[in-house]
Amino acid sequence: MKRKIQKITRSEKASSKPKLSSPRLPPEVLRHVLCYFDLSRQYPGNGYDNTLLHLDVVLDLMAASMRNHGIHAEKRYGPNIRRFAALLSSAHSLGLMYCRSITAFTILMEAQEPKNYEAFLTIFKLAKPVQLRIVISNETLPDSQARASKRKRFSKALGQHCTHVTSLHLDFPEDVEPTHTPPEKNPFLATHIQAMRASLTSINISNTPDAPTQLALSSCNNVLNAYFANCEVGAADFILRGLGNLRTVDLVDLKRGQISTLLTGLSSVCGQLEELRITETAAIFGTPTSEKLRSENAEALRTLILRCIRLKRLKIWNLPGVDNSVLRVLSLCCPDLEHLYLQSLHWAGDELTGAGIWNAIKTPWPRLQELTLMYEQVDPEFLGLASYAQLYISP
Image 1 (cartoon, rainbow, N blue to C red):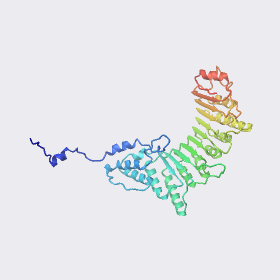
Image 2: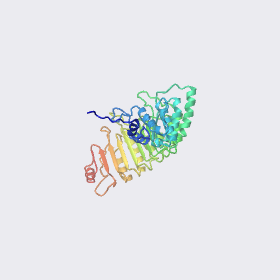
Image 3: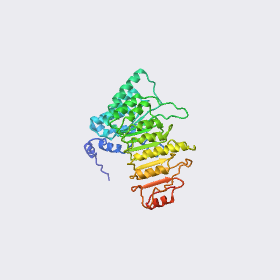
Image 4: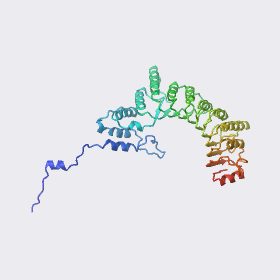
């Protein structure tokens, strides 16, 4: 018996295929995929997602998401920064939302090629990032007269697009001991900061800025939060004295100078200060401190705390001079204190016992949530009452 084989016509074959309006994924799907990528997490070895180690992966996805909107072939622009700027321009012309998703941007200032300037200006004009990090590198390029002229024009143009920046992180080259040379003047950076002056509310300074930059930063009187790390005491002091609306100050591992001078200067602008953290500042590990240094620090701290009537959080770690007199002023002038952390160097010679500060009828800090005193001889009565108040004590 012969088996009958049914023939399928060409038209029937065509009708059996699914009807698709386009073989490409909808751009909405690709944009949704892009939302799961974080360009700030590209650091292998730190437990972060390394899928974006090559930025071209994201830029390819970004380009693909626009092809259903009329972009069928993307022109290659070489370096990622220029390609990214071109894609942003295309997205903006198509009414896509990529520009709104960019909140932070980093510029490697000194080693930037002039041919990338236009790309930076495009990104800032379209995205308007509110967080800006500028890295000043020692790896400078040969600076001819033509390059310097282009850089000056770029700096002026970029300043016009920085008026929306609220958070600025400046990362200066580290000054390696024992050789000490003052940082080179950078007038272009000062120009950028002047353009951000009205909008800046937060500054983060790593290492020591040059003199024009210090002057520009000190004029940003709308700054609420200031962070200094590995910076010279004199530079931090000069900048802080011009910031009259501070709410938070972090001082981490400052160097070269007396911290007491900085604390005295800070007392003139600390009327609205709510958080103060001083960590490993103006202290050389393993070197005994003099009585004069402890006395100067204690006096400066008392002067500062007397004017910090709104202080809520205080952390002082490894600063000689924190003694009972400082704690007493703190108990009298800062009733809103919520977190207190005081730790002394084992060789500092400071005596902080808490005796007479806290007793059965006197509660200096009614809103206190956490208390840490890492000193060798804390008064037993102070410990008992603090424990009763469910606070943490670590003598």
